[in-house]
Length: 119
Image (tube, rainbow, N blue to C red):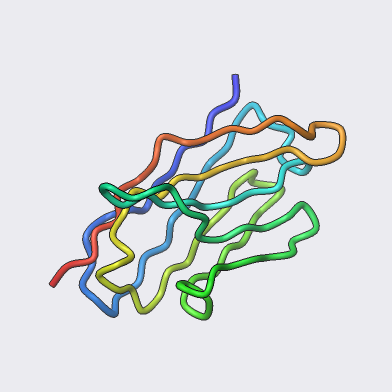
């Protein structure tokens, strides 16, 4: 059974930092591209960061220079380092795995972790 479990969310003041982790199990991790998405109340889910199996990364302009995605293939985890957090970063953050190569077409989601930026 595939599981993705996000941790590290919480309440932080504007300008602060948080580090999210996504622990995976039941997944051939090295064959999956990994991503973080977020969804604020009343908004659509949006991509926050993406890292391929070859460790190529991609960020939208809204977080570029503030967020960093990384992966540990041995630990089967993906991380999101978030710095200089802003009020608009408040959302539920989701971990997403989508297959490449021999597992192309498969994709999985975590249950999400709440990030609240507030003074």
